[in-house]
Image (cartoon, rainbow, N blue to C red; front, side, top):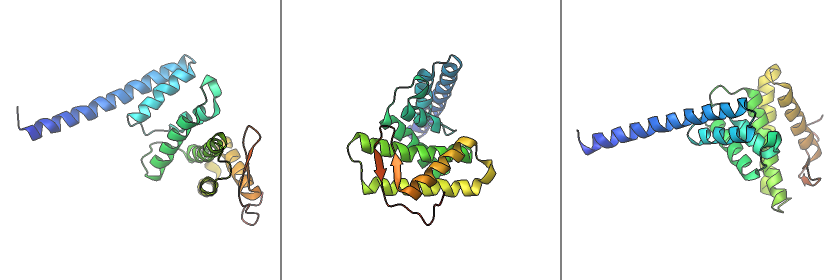
Amino acid sequence: MGSVKDLNKQVKELDARIQELEMQRELILGSIGFKQKNVPDAIEHFAKAVDYGYLGNYAFIGGLYGSGEEGVQVDLDKAKHYLQKFYDDYKLCRLEDVSPSNIVTAIYNLAATESYICIRDGVKHSAKVTNRMKRLFIELINIAEIAGDELEESAVDDVFRAGAVLYSGLFGAPNGEDVEFKADTENYKC
């Protein structure tokens, strides 16, 4: 049978394989949900796959939780969780097969989601959040400059919106409330 140390090593290896299989299972179930046009169910499965360790392009999960499109229930906390996790995985170079467009859109959505959470929670003018928004928008603009013509049209739109926010000092939320911060009219001319 082996020593306790060897047996514990085998258990850890089995746990890692089980986690990999669970991740693959959730990816397959998510794909089935998409093919059956059951996006809310698909998103739940893809989210579980991420929780099991999936490192492909999963930023769309946070985007859909934030927007409520395709019948997905809006959940800003889940949106922020998956967008922040994607951002952290990006910063740690863990992601696989992710385009600059995916990264730009995810960063834009993360900044927007944080703004929406502040408005929801009545913390509209938090310097901490507005400074983070500015840093995220500047980062996505820098990524776009490096990517150049590789960006998809939707990511270019996100870059334009980020530049407009930095230039104007206003981020407009869907409910009509604005998050305000110091405009930068010198560096971000539209």
